[in-house]
Image (cartoon, rainbow, N blue to C red):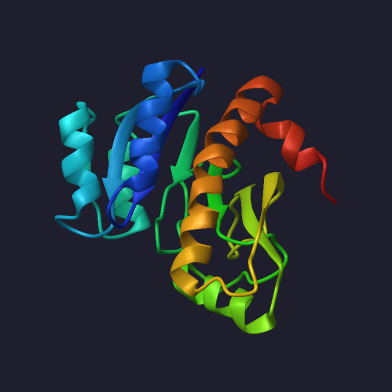
Length: 192
C-alpha cells in the first residue's frame, strides 16, 4: 500500500476519485496529506471533509517543507497546474495524469480544455489519458498506463472533456495499483 501526497490546484475531482477508491478497497494507497498551490480551492475543503491534512503552499519549496513532516511513497499530481520540483529522495516518485495519449497534445501549455480543443481541431477519432511519472519537463517521464476513448465526429469540447475524465477516473487508480505492485524503479528502467 502506497503512502500518497496529493497535489491539486482546483476542485478536487481526482481527490474524490482517490478517496472513493480507498474507501471501497480498489485503490492500494493511503492519502497522508493534500496540498494546493492555489489558496481556498474546493479541493482543500474536500480534503478537510475527508479528514486529510490539507495545506496551501504556493511553490515547490513550501510544498516540500510540508512533505518533510509526512512519510510519503508517491506524490500524485491531481490537476496540479504548475511544474513541480520534488524533494531529494522523491525525484522519481511523482505521478501525473495527462488528458491525452502522450506524446500527442502534451508539453508546456497543454492542459485541460487546451488539450481537448487541439484534439477536436485535429479531427481525432480517439483520445484518452496517460498516467506517467513526472520529471523536470512537462509530460516526459516514463509512462505507467494509457487508456483510449472514442471521439465522435460531432462531439464538442465539453463532451470530449467529460469522456476523457471518466476514463481518467479508471486509469489513475489502476496506475497507482500497478506502481504498488511493480515498484517505482520498474517503470524508470523500461525507458532509455
